[in-house]
Length: 188
Image (tube, rainbow, N blue to C red):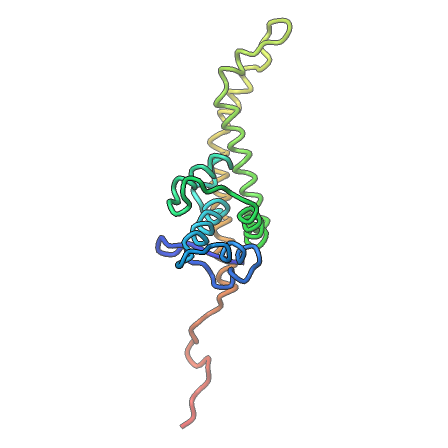
């Protein structure tokens, strides 16, 4: 289900979204005239969850801080509360396909591998009770050799996710134009 998407660098929210309980609660608590806070929170949810978001690559806690900083309408004291969490869960439930979920899990695994490789100095310095290294350098070098393949696989997976989204969008929209003679001939 497409709840919202980016078009021409602007977040476009489908009107139906405000009828969903979790999002309606965000709208109802926003007392501003133009519903600036509700729209900012929806923008936060989009960048926090959507597979096309550049923020998705960040760990969750860092992603929240970056988004709070980058979405100025939220303000410095804004926090992710239960209403926002509920809207996030609903967005994930309604918009995330199995392929997208698998891709997001793959990104998390790749990030964990990167964290492991980032700490190789500490790993190599680790010793067991007999003074021998606990991690063999060959394991680290083999992991490094596999990184280019992992990167290529992630790029291919991302392309598949985008392809699936486009396929799903095309199925839902249908054709808005009639082909020649498709709507019949007009008798005169």
